[in-house]
Length: 89
Image (tube, one colour):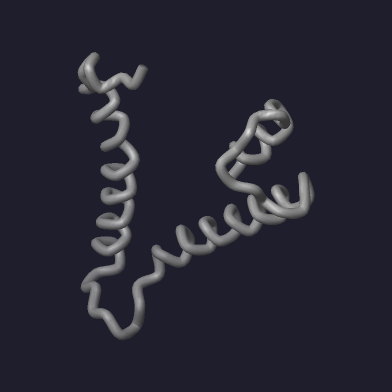
């Protein structure tokens, strides 16, 4: 979400495949709403639902933290193991 703001200012004349209406104000509104929504979802994911028996709270949170670390490092591992023929020219 931050990158759309940065790119809009650094490279304003690049033709893009999509248009965010409202100019720079629209870009800021969309990016801020996206950041708030992502933060909201990330924070509230650590609260287990009442209707679901998760066992011990630390086990639930440990699983979430472990899954987050795993899914954040997975793309880095794939990037490190890339082959030369994967590069687009």
